[in-house]
Length: 128
Image (cartoon, rainbow, N blue to C red; front, side):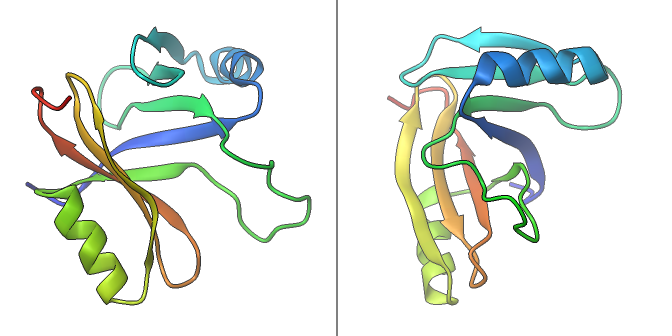
């Protein structure tokens, strides 16, 4: 694997409203994914760049005045389990345990020592 960013995620309390915003501003296309959790695949266009996803926020919206709040970057790895363990060993923490995205692969989330969250993606079409 390349350990390169391969996917971003936008978290939103109201995904329909947020999808309409990005579609209007950037022309992005949103396609509802038929998976175990509500999720929309985001096609940002042709050419260089990456595509992403839109999902229901799992907590409160960021407070006004926070210094940084942004999309979640997902990094393709050989093993989500091993990378989560490495993150913890090096001062980070597991944010969401490894889970299967059927037909896509294994997903997990970690936080760096400063609390920034990032996603991990292990391709595996047989994940279930």
